[in-house]
Length: 377
Image 1 (cartoon, rainbow, N blue to C red):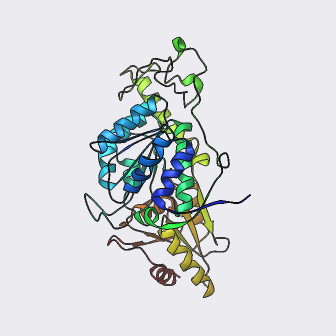
Image 2 (image 1 turned 120 degrees about the vertical axis):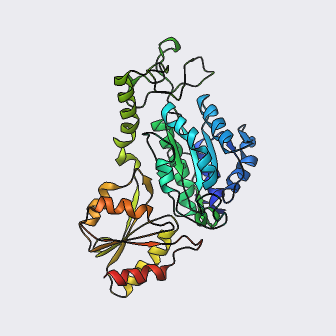
Image 3 (image 1 turned 180 degrees about the vertical axis):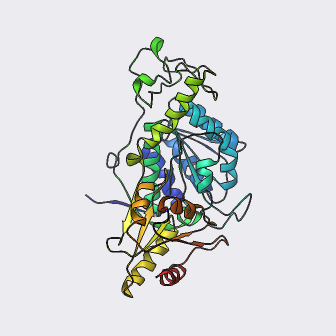
């Protein structure tokens, strides 16, 4: 069978990945460098009976997405750093109310307005800690246009499976580059849909833990009436301040992700079998790393790459094992050391960790990485 091949921009691939996953609702506000996601969906969603809303701001966009998710839609919003900051309060609401939704955050320079047209990888801590309180965080960091399509599909699956917001965070380079992409046929990639409750409406409780750490979610308007709040709540959704209930709820929110790390965390190992130097990278920077490692190997240097594809939850177990098998680890990133600190935490001193940091709006190039590999040998 002939493959359905296209030449897509990253943001265009993300939009089509959302459609493949069954997205029927988008609300957002234009922002560089994520606007193309909105542009594509403003054309494509009406064709399938879906809804596209350009809201007055990013806060309203996030609120609209949560509302649409509660009536049964698969929902998406897209933004960049300043808009992602504005969304945080309602992302927290989505976490505690356990509302499935997907956020595409195309990383650009910051803080504040920063460098709107330049690439960055400085939002990764915001994806985990941007909203207050203890809450789960799932964040995917694709490194190609093909992967941005596929990881957007996976983000919807994880969001539905674990009833939580999921963030997809390409950096500006991945979002704006154009590459050949093979579009999968319907059914070729797994698509997870919401499982309706197995009990009648009068017996339904939206946070009934007798079904496990991820209770089934009914859709408003389908005959089920239930309460949703941003407060700590009982199984029926109504607020409570009872210490034992609040404690159990908070622990369950984290556990539903932490207990399924092997299902959620993904990564790539490249030429690590006999590596003495490991480079840990993600996003577009990993493309420079791959080139640098190939050159290093030609020069007799045993280097390899561990590429992070799921940055939250962080691949603690894999980085810990890696650190016990190499002489040194290098962490190139377009920020001032956010991922490096996590790698150091996992390495626990077993191998020294050397960062390469760049925040001037230019990508980290292979020569910088190769130079660092030779320096730490």
